[in-house]
Length: 101
Image (cartoon, rainbow, N blue to C red):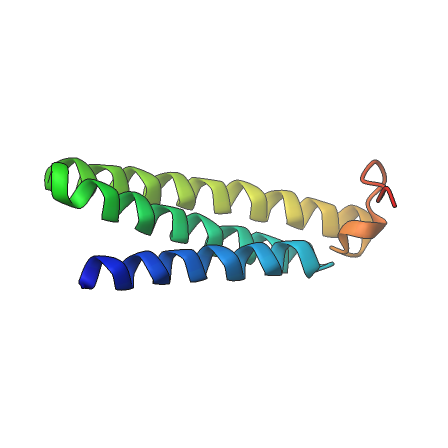
């Protein structure tokens, strides 16, 4: 019963993150949405490995959290540089990221 609830929570987290990443114009909101998607995927991976090898699941989550922290640090520094140069973090105003319609 608990596994099904965690699977649903994982899918909801991933879906909410995908919706936020696809509908947001702000790079900060996109970053937060991508982190929500990442956490949903980590929860699903933990759920899948919890029955086979609980120790391996813990190591996977620990590595994923460390990787996520590094990712956020790098992306926030890129956003700070983008804001200093452009004065905005709107992803539609960044040159080279034209939207194809």
